[in-house]
Length: 123
Image (cartoon, rainbow, N blue to C red; front, side, top):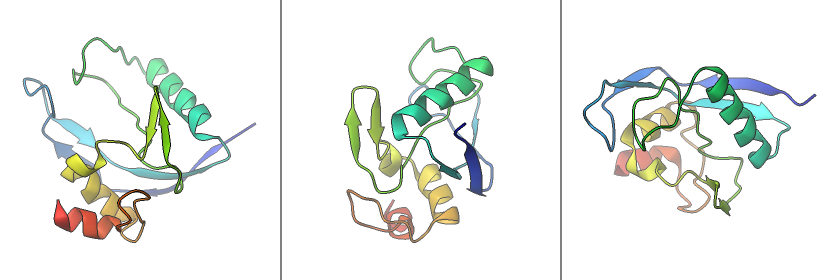
């Protein structure tokens, strides 16, 4: 059986919503994991966890009990209709870059070819 092991976790931070502003703030963090799953299979597992926790997808950027995203998958670049890695909104979300910088400041964005620390400073 394939496993997901937690390696590092950023600080939990409260952030204002993005996209749809008339809703409560969100709690966010970034977790680095180790797994034998391939990216698409990991996505299926994360969506299964969301469903089990009661996530219902009603409106884009709407309220949700949980939102699990794959930001990076090693240094892979994946462009599929249902999965884009690196996550396309990383560079637009300072709170994501803050958390990535906290746990992996030297990790290099495979498209931008810059470390998380540098991207966070530039944001």
